[in-house]
Amino acid sequence: MDLFEAVTQALGFGLAAGLLVAAVSVLAPAGRGALRAGLIVVAVAIGAAAGLLAASTAGESAVSGCVAGAAGALVAWIVAAPILAAAGRRTGEGEAGGLVLYAAGAALIIAALAFLFGPLALPIALSFLYLGSARRRRDARKHAGLRVLR
Figure 1 (cartoon, one colour):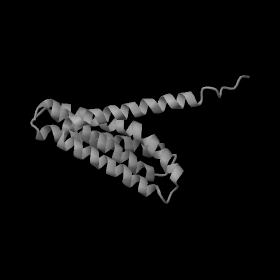
Figure 2 (cartoon, helix red, strand yellow):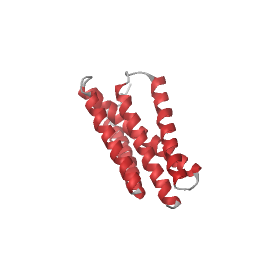
Figure 3 (tube, helix red, strand yellow):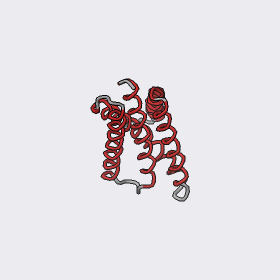
Figure 4 (cartoon, one colour):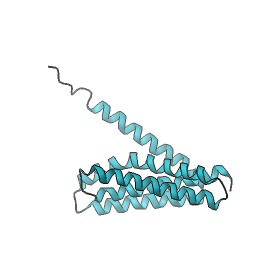
C-alpha cells in the first residue's frame, strides 16, 4: 500500500468516527456546551487514532494518517451533528435510538468501504463537504428577508 491509499483509508476511518460520535451526541441532553466540546475532542481523537493505525499498519508516515483521520472526523462532526440533532428533535425522545442506529450503520459502511477501497473515502469526504455547504447556503437564504427595520 502506498501513501495515497493509506491517507485515504485514514480519512475514511476519520469520517466514520466523526459520524459515529455525532450520532451518539443525539442521545446527549440538549444545551450542554461543555459536553458538545468534549464530544468534538473525542471524535477528533478517535479519528486521529484510527488514522494513525491505518497509516502505521501500511508502513507509511504515522503523522499523515493521524492528520487525515483527525480532519475527516472533524469534517464529519461539523456536518453531521447539526443534521442529526435536528432530526432527533423532530423524531422525539423515544425514537432517537433508531436514528443513532441508522447513523452508526452508515458509519460502519463508510469504514468498510475505506478499509476495502481506500480512495473511495475521497468522494465520501467531498459529499460531506457539499452537504455542509448546501446546508449553510440554505440557512442563509431562509433568513434573508426576516430583517427588522427600526
